[in-house]
Image (cartoon, rainbow, N blue to C red; front, side, top):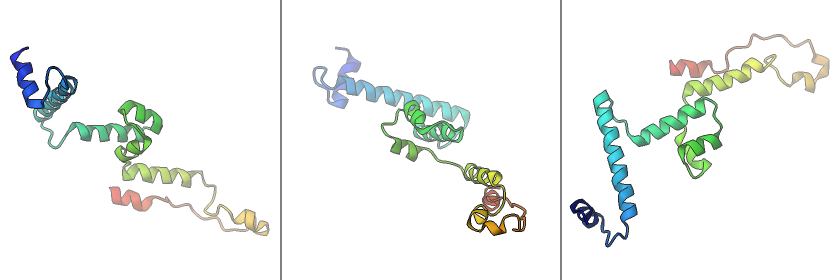
Length: 140
């Protein structure tokens, strides 16, 4: 048995190879984490972690319109609940979603003609204002 393996086994409590697989996975994770830290430091990025990158990955897929089940598969999450936790929609994206409703609405009144047919064509035409105007101002 190599000196490194004996040291690793002492550190992680593996005896005669028992628990070695888990130990290897932990060491591999720590090695990858270290590589990511060095890359971020070299690029001058602060506060970037693999965990934060998972949130960014999920959020950008959601904003691009990818369905949640596909996001779940790509990110390796066990449930759709976890996908919901990892995806964060920007206020701009939410405002644009509300705008789509306003753009597809023919008038400001959507049910008046059905309720009172005698008013059909007699309702004043209103100029549709952007529904999400307040959200846009908050984002800018």
